[in-house]
Length: 221
Ligand code: ASP
Image (cartoon, rainbow, N blue to C red; front, side, top):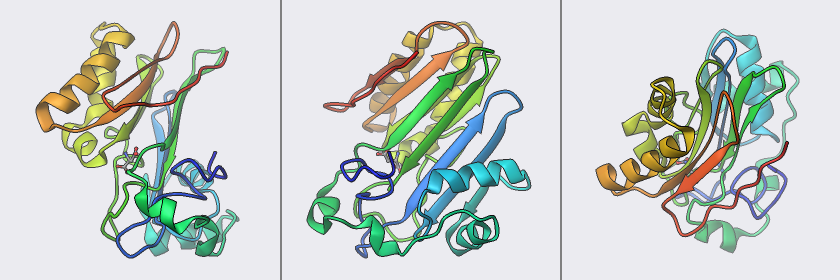
C-alpha cells in the first residue's frame, strides 16, 4: 500500500512545510512485545520494511532521519531517490493527513501484530515525528489483550498515550468495540482532535471507529 499514490504512505504521501516527503512507519508484535519504528525517512523505498528491520535487529525501538537511512543501507533495505515519492505535488500538498495505512492482525495461533506507514500530516515542520512509529501512542500489540492502530492527529495520540490506553482497557475486560468508540470519543472530548482507530482483541472480529468524516477500512479472514 506504500506504492498506492492515493494513500498517505510511500508514493503520494503528504508534503512537509518545505515541500518534501518525510515518512514514518512502525511495527509491533504482541508475543514478546518486540517493536520497531522509523521516523523522518526520505530515501527508504518501503519504510515499513525498515521498521521491521529495526524490530528484528532488536537493539533499539526508534530510529530517525539520517541514522535510520544509514541503518537501512547497512541492512540491505531498498533505498530510493526521494523524488520517487512525489507524483502529484498539488494533491500531496492539499492532503489533510488522511489515509495513513495501518493494519492489525491475529494469526491462527492467536499471535497479534500491528503495522503502520504514513507521511504524517500535511505542512508539518521538517523533523516532526508523529504517533505512528511510537509504541503506546499510535500502535500497540500484546498477545494477552489486543492490538491497536491509530490514525489522525498524531500529537493527540502521543499526548494521550492512546494506543497503550486502549490495550489496558481491553486488559480490564472492556469489549473491543467499546474501547474503539471510547478512544475516538476521548480524542474528541479531551483534545478536540480528529482521528480513527482499528483494533483486534484476543477473540472475535476486528473493529474500527472514527470521528472524522470517513475512514475506509477492510477485514479479511
Ligand atoms: N497519525 C499520523 C501522524 O500524525 C497521520 C495520520 O494518521 O493521518 O503522523
